[in-house]
Amino acid sequence: MSDYRIGEGMEVTLHFTLKLEDGTVVDSTRDKAPATFQVGDGNLPPGFESPIEGLTDGDTGCYEIPPERAFGQHNPQNVQLLKREDFEDIELEVGTVMSFADPSGGELPGVIANVEGDRVEVDFNHPLAGRTLTFEVEVISVRPATTH
Image (tube, rainbow, N blue to C red):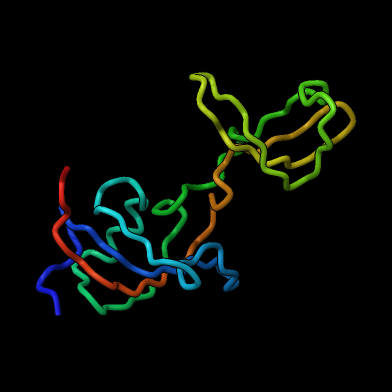
């Protein structure tokens, strides 16, 4: 049994399952290797880190994470209307995730929300924006993070 607990400066290895309100599994490590991250490294949104603070090896938990602590609320301003001709000869299907260049030259994922005539509606909100998520965890190990 470890004396270490999840908190600042710790490296955590855990299994997790992320579910939507209706029980649909969005992401899970159950069928693959567990996830390892350092607390505060940005791999886990803060809303997912705070409920598991203080847990140690072997602990399990199930937490409801509201949208504002997970991926934010759905923002209508993040839905953009683009011209069909901007997509050249791409076959556009509602629900398709595409990569767009953001103003700083980075990549921004967008979901095709609607195609009507020569207009294409693209939703740049995180796919899980506005959703309350259930975060189930099983802590495998907690140890001091090694800095390189």
